[in-house]
Amino acid sequence: MRATFCALQEYGYAGLSIQRIADEADLSKSTFYHHFDGKDDLLLSFQEFMLAQFDKIVQLESTGDPERDLRTLIGFILDDLPDYGEMPEKDAVLRSLVELRAQAVQDAEFRKKYAETDEQFAKRFERLIRDGIERGEFAEVDPERTSRMLLTILHGAILQHATRDDDPAVEIRESIDEYIDQRLVVEDAHSTD
Amino acid sequence: MRATFCALQEYGYAGLSIQRIADEADLSKSTFYHHFDGKDDLLLSFQEFMLAQFDKIVQLESTGDPERDLRTLIGFILDDLPDYGEMPEKDAVLRSLVELRAQAVQDAEFRKKYAETDEQFAKRFERLIRDGIERGEFAEVDPERTSRMLLTILHGAILQHATRDDDPAVEIRESIDEYIDQRLVVEDAHSTD
Image 1 (cartoon, each protein chain N blue to C red):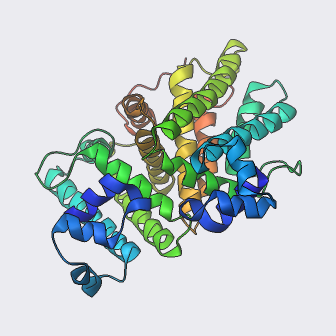
Image 2: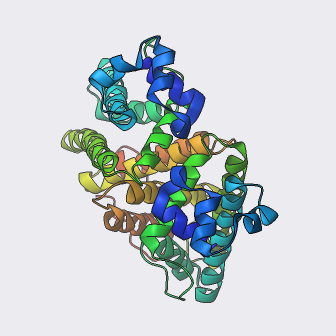
Image 3: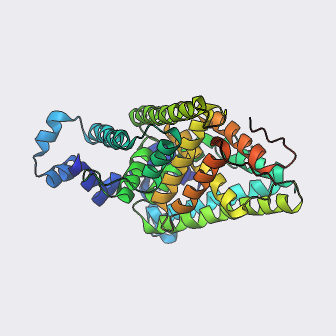
């Protein structure tokens, strides 16, 4: 998986091949073909691996406080992952994510995988939002719609982060915090001047 | 430009070549190399062409009413472009946009182009928002931050639309309308129960 990530960084999706990943891993091509049908099959597994790594970190950092956990989750995506020595640098991760996600335009297997991944993330947001509402800490928003909106904002932020040199992530982070303050958190004064 | 679009639809970015675009256009490869340095140079011009087409439609549909024009602009991106017989089907346009945008991960020229394109869109939103505030129709939001947020939401919507089969665009459209209602439009009652 690390070799896949390194090869993806170095050559991009278009230049990626099982040969190059094998070279990166100091293994033979046949070892790879024993486990994977080809480049795209390997990349689907790579996605799952990345998501599992992310899940592990989210679990480790969870506090049980919905507002804090929601902001932490968003921060992991937009700002920085805590360093557990297992995840590579965030910029590189986001760039790879965007390159792989774009393959879904042409590839139905990737589209299926991403619909699933999106649902997992949306459900995670939704749980935190429902929790917050139950505790009376969040306003009575529509949890499903709000979680989809957050997911959409994050997708937009990741896409821009990975495809521009002048990264708008900091400003986007501020906007999301504002969105959470104004739409979700109950204690917050709603100014509507 | 139409041949480029058709070839991009058929082969995707990875399978695209000047030869295939030339075949699609019934022209010789040398005609293309007379005008463009290669595939990526042609695609940068293609982007500009698409944006110019979009601009033309936005101009034609402008009413001078900021709220209406803002919703129309968002609708063109998320729902459907009015049919002037010049733009291909929206789904195909958005898929091509995502494929091309992902090239910016590896290509600095594309990154520069997209930073510019994003700025153009953000400025367009910003003008409409400033207009609405001046007329007292929009709340006193930060025009720059709000326009960036809208752009980010649209990027996220386009990315999901192009890379999933279960298109969440309708729900996202509702969320954006809600966002505009609650954050921007002054006449609207702010419910904060």
